[in-house]
Amino acid sequence: MTDPNALNPHPAEFERFLYASVGEDRNGSVVTVLSTLARLELDPWQEAADLVALGRDAARSRLETLLARFRDVPALASDHERIARDLSELLPGPSSAQTLRRTASTGSDGRPATNAAFWVALGIIFLLFQIFMVGGSGAGE
Image 1 (spheres, rainbow, N blue to C red):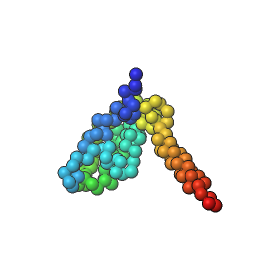
Image 2 (image 1 turned 45 degrees about the vertical axis):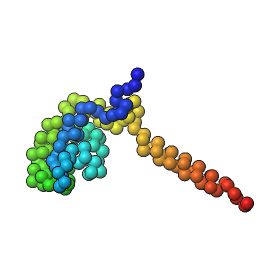
Image 3 (image 1 turned 90 degrees about the vertical axis):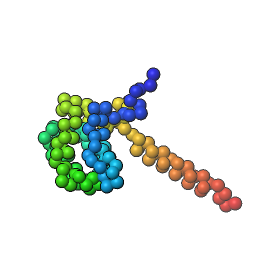
Image 4 (image 1 turned 30 degrees about the vertical axis):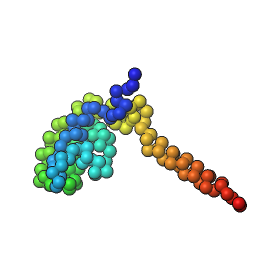
């Protein structure tokens, strides 16, 4: 039987928080916490795990700082403190912080996530194969 988390290896406890709205962008599209963190070049699941580990007050403060930096949602300019307070209430409790942090940075089978390393290695192998094939054919003929 297949693992039910194979397609979504991230902790389900973060979903309420990460899929919550921070407001609408200038085009009228709803922007989520996940999108906000990604646009700030942060890993949303790792950031959520870090916020849980900080505790409610420190997490709220960190969220205020992050939301104040985000310029795609005009309403955040004046209301980022209230939104950060509301969002911090959606974070899971601190009792599961260590487990969530470990899960956020691992694959669905519990091993550390190696997607990037795998693709880099595969790219290098492909590049070396291409060099070998081009360099080896027709030499001197």
